[in-house]
Image 1: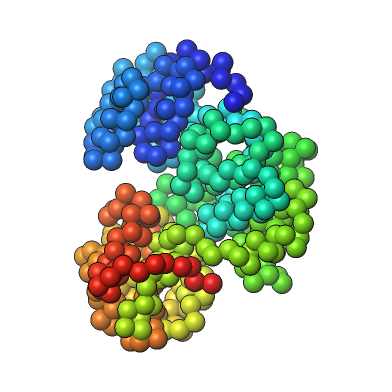
Image 2: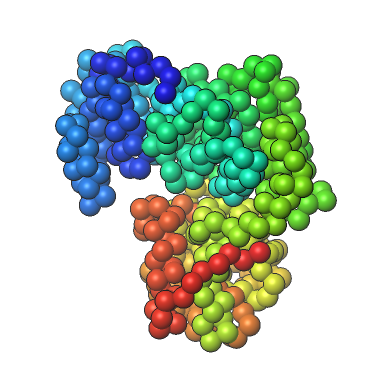
Amino acid sequence: MKNTEYFRGKQVTVVGIARSGLMCARLLHDIGARVTVTDRQDTPLTRANAAALEERGIKVELGRHSPGLVDGRQLLVVSPGVTAENPCIRRAEENGIPVIAEIEVGWLLCPATIIAITGSSGKTSVTTLIGRIITAAGKQAFVCGNIGTPFCQEVPRMREEDFVSLEVSSFQLERIKAFKPKIALILNLSRNHLDRHRDMQEYLDAKSRIFMNQDEQDHLVLNADDPALAGCASAARSKKAYFSSAGWANPNYAAAAAVGKILGIDDGLMREVFAGFKGIEHRMEEVASVNGVTFINDSKATTAESANWALRSIPGRIVLIAGGRDKGVDYGVIAEEVRKKVKEVILIGEAKAAIARCLQGTVPVREAQTLPEAVRMAFAGAQAGEYVLLSPMCSSFDMFSDFEERGRVFKQAVHELSGKEKGSSAVR
């Protein structure tokens, strides 16, 4: 690792003890930082993570943020879910204490070449595909970031000749300082996270931070088909490259191929990887067929655009399950596709009323109190040859710890319908 001496002996407070905060705290402790962790939530998950850190001698506070855990510190590291209104951040800024994101810590320590991927939708699939084409070309690739495996968890294993395919969110980019990927990729921009960003311009500004430290030796890859990204090219100093879905069956393949071209990976090899790609868990994942009804787990779809893509991809009539915590998404984006392909919508979570208003007059809409109840209702309304699709368009935090738990609950409810466990495969 690089720059370990920068952190050695430094008094650091990590705010947030979810997956990325846990691994960041462990890494900083292991390289000699004097680490304290604080999280305002006191839940079974945070208690389990706290116990794991306390076994290493790391002090952890749950259920509050004490001022004493900020005062006198030399650095504050924040997890993606921590907003600017957090009292730890406010106190740190008032006292001139630097505040950085977990990916900034990873970048400072990482010796490998970093390819950073952001966008409103498609990040996880493209991040995975880039990792696979690099591996197919005979190089070591680490696939991590917002995709599930924290950056800081993998950094100790990395070498200078390795590559990192790193999924990053606008939340993570808000708190970078010197983060500088060799290749930055912005997939698209659509209404999302407006519960956190004031408007679309602030959201775009956060995404654009991915290339703010790049220079003429770096690369920025942009979606040529997305007019919202048109202004990014003139603002960047890096070399520009573009991808377009024209002529491709899947825009995610085109995006990954644009990065592969920069890396000098053979086009035929990339196409072999794409042909063998079976998708990722919780993204268009076929769970089971019960009495001829096929259940699709698309829990990763937290935008209307992602749900719209899922609706277009399914070759039959659909009962759609959607809803969760609202992020300022324009749910009306799916109305046309709903009219054409959906026979009924079943809504869950805090955004039920907002989604129902946007879909008024399209198809019948019903509400369920829980996801298992929604699965049972959808099954009762579907016929053999039809599909039940979970594609929420919302975050999961009103009812679940993350989209993965939501997907697991959906799959368990389906398996209970079928009466036995079944394997899963991705829908192409």
